[in-house]
Image 1 (cartoon, rainbow, N blue to C red):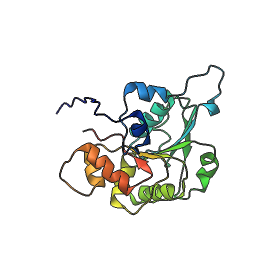
Image 2: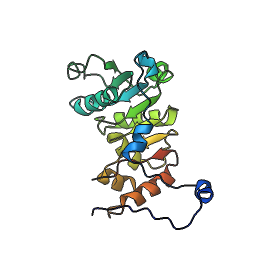
Image 3: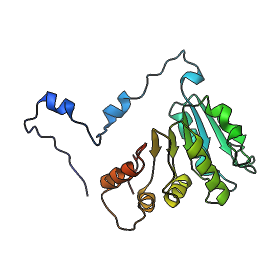
Image 4: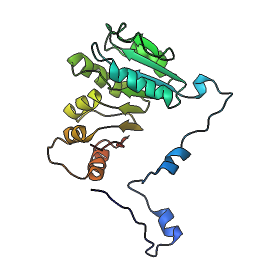
Amino acid sequence: FPVTIVFLDFGLSSKDTEEVNPVAYLLDGEKVLSQIPPLKRSRHKYEAGYVISVAGSPGMPGAALLSSYAALRSGAGLVRLFHPPGMQAELSHAPYELIREVWESTDIKPLEKELSRAQVVLIGPGLGRSKFAEKRVKKLLSRVELPCVIDADALFFLAQNPSWTIPKGSVLTPHRAEMTRLLSREEKRDSFEQSCRLSIRWREGSFPNTAP
């Protein structure tokens, strides 16, 4: 149902409100835009942020391309997509700016050099739900110290393994069905309450996407 938020002053002084420890923040367009750094015509790509994307699987290139391209379009200076072998032809029409690199195993060592240079990791779009993919997600979440955007199939594995930990500052992006799976229940409940419950479970993460 549509919701109208109305702000009412009920007598608290500014000093009182400043001392309150909030449990949630209401974001609007103006606040979001204020957090976006201004563009500088003189900056180079490494000053604009480096995103590592671990996504895709043979036969499922779309989500990997869409999410990686979105990172580029949103302003990232460099995006490197690590994908399984056998996808080279499917990814041949990717934007020239997208760096593509094959990751053949579950060993994280081939990624370590780039992880040391990046600022954020995207995990999950189009990975599939094989045991191979699950091992990759587990290894990344346990070893990576960068904030992660955890999406799609990575959320599925996280729901199947609630004891896993996630890196500090990570963002989980479940839709309603994925949120239900993460909570291990079928009944529907207010999405804000769902986000609060999951934030308690994974204290390092936030949950911005709980819409249908």
